[in-house]
Image (tube, rainbow over all chains, first blue to last red):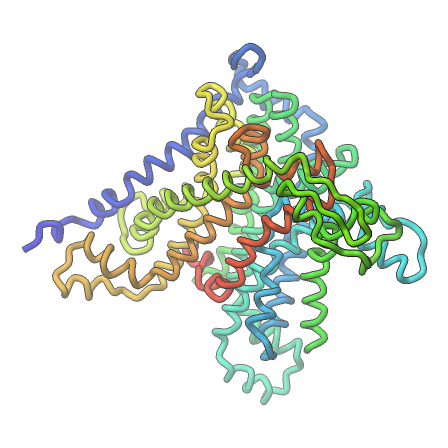
Amino acid sequence: MRQNKEISDLKFALFMSLPVIFFLIFVVIYPLAYAFWMSLHKVSMFGGLKFKFIGFSNYLKVVTNEKFWDALFVSIRFTIESTILTLLLGLLIALILSKPFKYKTLIRSMIIIPWSISLYGCGIMWAQIGRGQTGLFTAIYHLFGGDDKVNLIGKNYVIELLALGNAWNLSPLVAFFLLSNISTIPKRLYDLADIDKMSNFEKFWNVTFPPLRFTIFVFTCITIVMSLKLHDFIFTLSQGGPGRVSSTLTYEIYKLSFKNMQLGFGSAMSFYLLFLIVGSTLMLYWLWGRRLEK
Amino acid sequence: MYLGLFVLLIWTLTPIYWYLKLAFLTPNNINIFPPVFLPDDMHFGAFFNIFGYDYTTADNILLPASGQASQVIRGLLNSLFVSIISTIITMIVIVPLAYTFSRLTFRFKTALLLTILLSVALPPISTLIPFFAMYVKLGLTGTKFGLIIVTLTITIPFVTWMLIGYFRNIPPIEKLGRIDGYGRFETFLKVFIPVSKNGILVAAVISFIFSWNEFTYASILVNGTKAVTFPTSISSFLFQHPHPQHLSASLFLGMIPPFIVAVFLQRYISEMNIVDPLR
């Protein structure tokens, strides 16, 4: 009789994951705690790191800072636009790809490309596309006889451009997961829908859509989280500009912490961002996800 | 129907084409106004330039080698090193973790799972601040070792999450292992891992892509040092020495590995059920 058969679930689980949990504590919990500790201090970088305890005044300084509120508003606007676009595009792509067609593997491989491109790369690409001098939209405008520049990296549309690029990058992933859900819907249901003489839209709404709801909920959460914490894409696309128009919370934190070297102030602001991320997903779960669970 | 597919392909590929055409242009042609869809004289000059070779076009224009070539090459090698090492560590760490989470019930499981999900939601920019301060103290800025550690904060939580969902969908084959007289560890190693090797492979590849594409950490921690990675090494074409055609060519090269992987793995990606662990 082997001895290790006697190990209980808890002991086995501990044995398997304890090293990992220590590791997670080391790379996730400890830095987080350290960041919190830093946020209670005034950190100066000149002549070595120096910390001066100032309590919660960094947190107070954040909420009385006008830039914080601007950035918060930009972040929320960007996130809402990104989420709606990503989910709609993902659903659209999934619906188109769910029909039978030739060269399926080849076409699916091409559709997934945007997802494989790095976010900093996407930022560089979409900067080129949006800029008036070199942009795609200028080229299209000229094709139809215009002779002006169409500059999307201006104060009116830069956030929409960011959201469009973000959705372009994320939607293939959403589509692939939705697609695998759609493929589990029994064909019989569509035959029944035909007997009921449903229109295409009714079929979509009553047959295709209901089994997708949980996946859509999860990806709404994922897109919200991804958009709120997005940094490199914004960094290479617009550098928060022009001016501070597209300066999201992440970009503002980056500027404070690594350009102005106000690490304490920066980490205080980053905790507000973390609350926003966790808060918005919890709220979404409370309002929507709870009802979808089996 | 086919119209939909056509529009979809245009939407997907145009942005890529619009940027990558720069890689094949001579500097004078890049800023032509209005921008054109199909430039006439395209060549591979920039691809030679970024690796430190001169190139002469068909019209006898000499395109000098890029001064950043050594940085680009070093960046490629460093990126490869950092990505491979962090992938290996990630896999060693997460396979047992995901296994215990997907198969066993024990106390504190929900709390631990929530910690993992929380670390997926952590913005890299906030993790970066404490790491930056710690690294300055410990002298770890500009080292590959330091970069690998931070990279793990991205790869581990996300890939664990994916793998838990995948492991859950694997039928309970452990009993078979028990019948053969294996203990728990042997069952895990000799029965479970072979059965789930597809999912483990996808997880490894995704963690490779994540570290390959990582920019935020690298731009602060290793930019301009010996440990520079590919993404940061090419960002100097963007800011310090703007050469759109070189930037485009390098970006194109950097896209190739994730692209190959995505094409080969697209049919497995949806098997990695990231929706499941939440149920």
